[in-house]
Image (cartoon, rainbow, N blue to C red):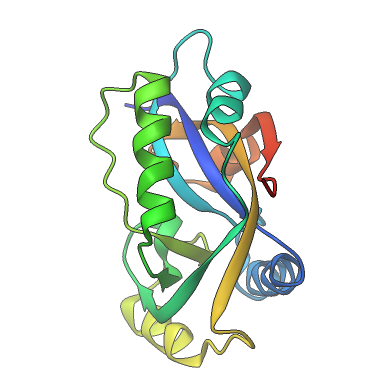
Length: 176
């Protein structure tokens, strides 16, 4: 049974954003998968009134843009994590997770494991493994410069679920 949740995403800055968008679109075309915006989920929880832009704007007034280091490519049997790149869990990201979780008053058990998904698709393990092994990004860290609140189904398990996502608010991280 699906429920509606609000996911809070950390959005890559340029030039990494464009490179990731191109890679996601290329993989979507090659594997007949949905296209989606590159992001790192900071937190996801039940939808409540008064959340979204208010929550993200209160969470970032003193948050400067920051970067997360890349670790390695991985794969899983989860639709939204077929092939992904793991990222370093930084103090800044942990702090944003705690602030957003508190402001949104979510009781979810979302576990922060930072990653950038590259393809949403149910794939055989051999295909996922080969694709993950082939991933080479031209950078060793990703800069992030904004946060978005997105309404989505949980679990997101089909291309139709992805097509129904709706951005509810967006706030830029700013220099102090």
